[in-house]
Image 1 (spheres, one colour):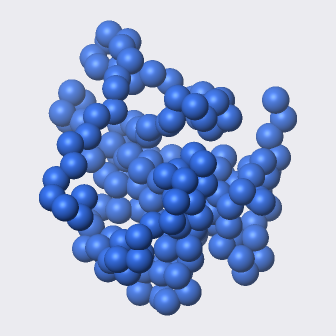
Image 2 (cartoon, one colour; image 1 turned 90 degrees about the horizontal axis):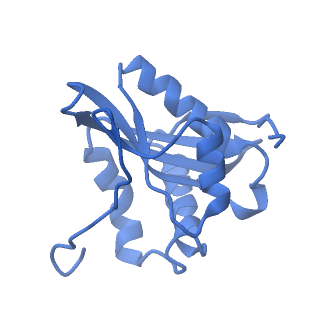
Length: 169
């Protein structure tokens, strides 16, 4: 499969800049509205709280991809820690490209930047979750070297689980 190279630019989002803050919220909301997101807009209160809350998170990585002056892609990552390796890891929590820009190499370029930053941070691995009904994304991740999670030397599939807390969770 031939993948197109992204000719735009990628840079860390400056959450203190109103244009970057707006782009982060707009791109995440577009992702939420997509069938591979939640299929609906983020609630207004979440959109209002998002950037201030992200500013308070240490060891975050928020990247924006631009085609000219238009923000067309977003990655939000958080640093964690692998106790089995006693080293940090970087989790790709959100990876989103506007639907009209998909297939142009933007997600590949974002992941390349994420991997470079993870190496600078001496992370032992990148992690992410992918929906079972999103074979296009899974194929991309596999092509970029992602595979089933491993604990020690035993290859095993993991299930993502959650427990929501409070009324605003």
